[in-house]
Image (tube, rainbow, N blue to C red; front, top):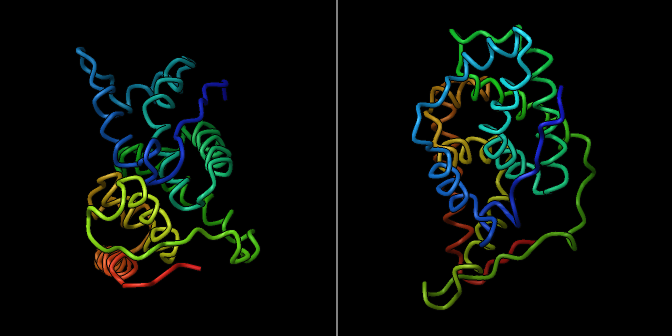
Length: 215
């Protein structure tokens, strides 16, 4: 695959400069050119016909969401960059097998990313408690800075079970419809809804519990 990859992202999933919701808004505004965007399927066709610029455009279009998704699961900027690059390489190699009648390219790409993140997590040993950030108790909205709140959200998100975390990020951050999340997660629509509901409950309890800290 041609060397198109340029790492993106800053300091965290919700972290201030690297706030995932803030970056998503900026990215969507910046990706709204005055002309009509070329469809992913057309870029795929061009790539398969030997036009390497086609895949470069696909990378530029999707690298932010792939990095954000990987980072939300792995919690490591370096690991997320490696997984994102590996995911695009895998997609490039398997591009001839992509079937647009079964899923959007972005859905297919995030499925590849998700599987690689899961494999990476399985390789990790248990993390020492000293390496975990702490979630301080919340009092009133004015009692803490917005940056601190984002830090707490990062910590709380990291404590979710991985299946709940992936479903929550895809639904609430990347704004994927539930049926596409089900395809990415290879599960049922009902299971996706349940995971997102439980993730929201868990995040709320972590952020609302007085005096609760995360080890």
